[in-house]
Image 1: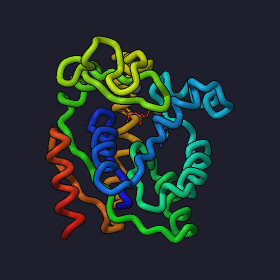
Image 2 (image 1 turned 60 degrees about the vertical axis):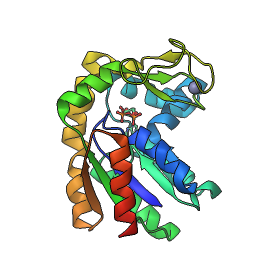
Image 3 (image 1 turned 135 degrees about the horizontal axis):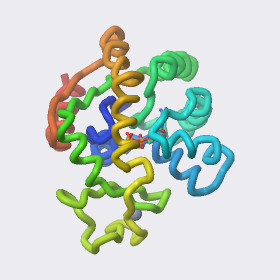
Length: 215
Ligand code: ADP
Ligand code: ZN
């Protein structure tokens, strides 16, 4: 399947994407994971992205398109992909259309995961992430803690609160979402690709996606 996952930070894009990869071998492509990996590895990309990320601002479109142009041409994308956290702006969505045309790829749909704001705020402040850039498993101190406190179940690395998950950065990320990313819902509605799923449970989101894909 070839899907775009839309939704506010904390809507569950990453969790849903990880669950979908287990269905048909499609790969999760998270620009946030790629960027955090680059920051930790200290690459040129990481150095350019870090300040924007810590402040909860978007990384410039050019950097993101450079990442995606390469990533979508890797062989593991042939089975399908789940775009998680990309596109995030109208210019990115337009550039993605050009890129997909060039590569001869057609999207199945853009899933808008719609979760109430109070749930989002609660999730973001209680979310923890595995610090291993190759793992980045997601936990929640209340609803899904690691078996051993502070230690990733999957890889044993420390589980930490992201630097952009302070209250200030979170409220800034939500503002940025409303201003820059929410307009993508209308963009993909115009393309006839947008499906909105209002569900706070990731299983319900998965089931709604499966139904739509089968229809
Ligand atoms: P979340 O969805 O929880 O906000 P992500 O892991 O998707 O978090 O992204 C973390 C940060 O990485 C964003 O706040 C932003 O700075 C940067 N980022 C990720 N994807 C993009 C993108 N497509 N365009 C611009 N910046 C991005
Ligand atoms: Zn881990």
